[in-house]
Amino acid sequence: MTIPEPAGPLAGVRVLDLTRALSGPFATMVLGDLGADVIKVEDVWHGDDTRRWGPPFQGDDAAYFLSVNRNKRGLSVNLKTPEGRQIVQRLAESSDILMENFRPGTAARLGLGYEELSRQNPALIYASISGYGQTGPSAGLPGYDAVAQAVSGMMSVTGEPDGEPVRSGTSLADVGAGMWALIGILAALHAREATGRGQLIDISLMDGQVAWLTYVAGKYFATGVTPGRHGSAHESLAPYQVFPTADDPLMVAVGSEGLWHRFTAATGLDDLTDDPRYATNPERVRHRDTLIPRITQALAARGCAEWTDLLNTAGVPAGPVNTVPAALAQPQVAAREMVVEMEHPVAGMLRMLGTPLKLSAQPASIRRPPPVLGQHTDEILAEAGYPAERIAELREAGVIRLQQATQREQIPDAGLDSDPARHPHAGDVGRGRGQRDHVVAVRGQPNVGRRLVRRGLLDRLGAGVGDPGHERYAQIGDVAAERAVGEKAGPVLLVHVAQSAGEGLQRLAALLGGGHTRLALVSIGR
Image 1 (cartoon, rainbow, N blue to C red):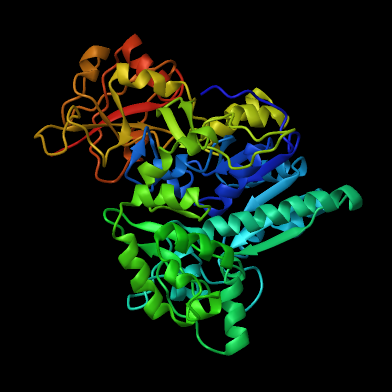
Image 2 (cartoon, helix red, strand yellow):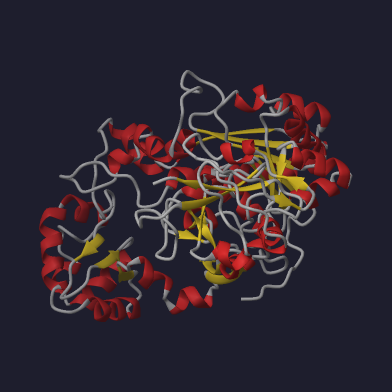
């Protein structure tokens, strides 16, 4: 699907995204969908944790990562170095928004906290997402989605009445925190128009889940009774739940007296319409124990699809409990462009969810696939005023990393496995096949290392591997490989550096980061 690049409502807004996992990346993805220039900052080793949250993997990255990181440019920086921190500080000076989801205090210790950055850029809007917020007795605790659902009380009201508490099927605490952050950011952008100043936005997973208790908490405040679990049913409405039919389950939502009349007429339950036990919603809730069996018996006479048509025609909200594939295959989903396709330089054609934001004048758009780790590092630093010589120095020192998106397009032909070594393929060398595993190690690019090499690659390149005890050094361009390069790949590796192979070996070096990259081929003894 080719999508034009309209000027979205946030065009011209720059976002510095220091987040990982789900809550922050989801929020910054939406900002990107709305036209903002989002720079995703990742480390130089592995990047966002979710790149490895698989299987499944598509190309090098997990499907999880790919689902929430579109419309971003990738910058790979080592924040453990002073130079790396200076890069982010410099970028923050010209950014409108910075978002981070470190544990409270971590960003400040790195020199990337709100107080320090706002002194250099008073207009900066600084959004922070954490498990419990920046204040309070629990502020320093680690926070994850499932824990937030548990401690907030949300999990206690989710599940069947006689079953155990369960988390929601998707990470609603994370996504919810991302949405609360978006609301705060948009409000702060509006306020900045009047004041010229940014502000700190403090969002927590815990707060977001407590806020979502809404009427459940309201009922507790009113009665003092601890809310319980009701499965698919609604504690304050009836009938409002999933019912079995002659084949598949059906969700019915009767939320008013008018809908009750339509429902009884469509289902042949006319005798219940004005029955004093069921004539009003409070009475239906009170007499749920006798009402639900009557409805269940009636709905068992037909299948789910037939009931869906009958009830919807009557104006009663009802529908099947779809599987995810069935939900995504609905004509309505296609009509609303909620499933789109985009070409990724490594993974190929990606299917991803579309944006639910339908703006008439300045629509949201999907313009960029999720970035390869460090994909736009040189581009971003050049825009920030770094000369090419300084960028090269930073790369050589391991402060930054650039992974060209186009490199991976050549990998299948070259025979280099694009999956991590822990996910071998039938054509890989070694891994239980009685042969050696050939591993590529590249200085300054540790995540490119530890790759399996497809069978026959070295022969096609005209390269060989030295016998044990007869290590040789490969000359790549004009920089000789060093023993330390191979040893960096791990203490268990025996260094057997490939013989010089002229153009073939230079080609392999080019695939992995340029003709002057220090490179060694090493093998693990069985």
